[in-house]
Length: 356
Image (tube, rainbow, N blue to C red; front, side, top):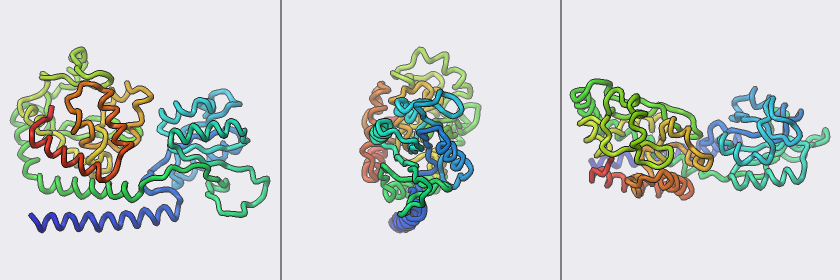
């Protein structure tokens, strides 16, 4: 066992070093953190320059940008224009926007208003300057033939995020290998206990609201989803979240699995695929996600997790807002150290059988 732990630690250290070096190389080559993935962009200004910029980003997916639409105070909605600059906050949050690009002509007051709003929302801001036909005298970021000046950039903890990913890969991989006999035994018990598949696969809202297939051991009867609406009036959670005590849909083996959180074990596969992390806000079903208010959406700025701050501090609190506030607090305070503390507390919760 000691040699196995030493081997896992060595893998984690080597992987973290390699990942960090690759991330630094990626940033030096592109100016964009490698962990960012595809970035959602709002373009302020739907004139000729804005349209050229949108066309460039559409034709060059290697730039890693997806245009959500235009904001323009001079044009009516339609043809890509989705609002005015005063609508930035709501549209940026609803569209999970990462970056705002100002594509002139530039009105000083409107530009300052957008810049202040973007800083409050923690969005990157770039501007396409009017160079009057001249070549820039210093290096700028180029989108095709359009130079861009960075007015505001949010700093990302690249090293910490890559270390988190390495923890996910090593932790989930080791868990799946070491627990393979347990997984097989649980699968047999589920099949013997009630008719239906061993795994329950359901769509959940992932980072930026993108749906993904989340795996769990089946703990309910086969037609549980069909019965959910009939039981919704008994919901004991406040807000867009469904939970009832003594749920009649849960099977005998299912109650045991839930008590010790064993039904979550297949999600280690979601972690390996990068759809989930070991620690993060729990992924909600799509029908719960569809009932989110605008202020709830920041919890989807990060990858969902198998366990989180809510699970180890207020698991039995019925308030949706309590869980939401704890998820936002986790995102604000995040560090690798916090993840490790949550994992240790999760182990204690599981061993006590506090699952519900």
